[in-house]
Length: 266
Image (tube, rainbow, N blue to C red; front, top):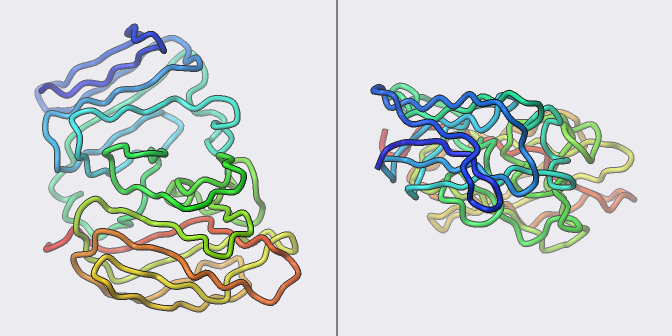
């Protein structure tokens, strides 16, 4: 199967398309406007491997592990757009790219959690997050916000202050699925710090796919919380057992999780 990027409307009509060059890179520069119902289809010649994808010129590239031949990205509009840079998917000129990841990119020490093109559901594109609660089902409080690379945490609501919100639910938990084994030595949590509106978690439990877990402690701070936790061959991490601090506010939230390491076995 040939690598392609295709923009199509709600009826399936193709608005723009580009195919791979000899290098395997796909470059789609097209003129036109996105409208509600549009979707971007990335077609990959191989699965169970790594690619670098740019879904919009106003967003960072995503280093992703792909498990499906096609990944469909639904262009956000209206309320679903509120957690994205307002410049994204706008205007009449657009620039999208797809390419196989370089060997050095795959082998490098990096943030294994970041994926700016994560979506709800089972997209076949990792890393991916999901949670048992997202405040009022609103885009600005979706789990995907916690791995989009945006770490502004001194307010809440529309981009760049999107976060994972737990709707005051005591049993809230979020899972970060890597889609493959990874090795890491550092986990960083940016808790939302819109004080006095926000509370914070005094303790939380990180549970790992190998059956182990670790309790971490945090304090009221705009600074990130960094934990030296070394694990190998981990396919997912769950953040749960969230214990709020003694504070009048009922609103703790997570702005970002970062996991630093390498691909498993490297």
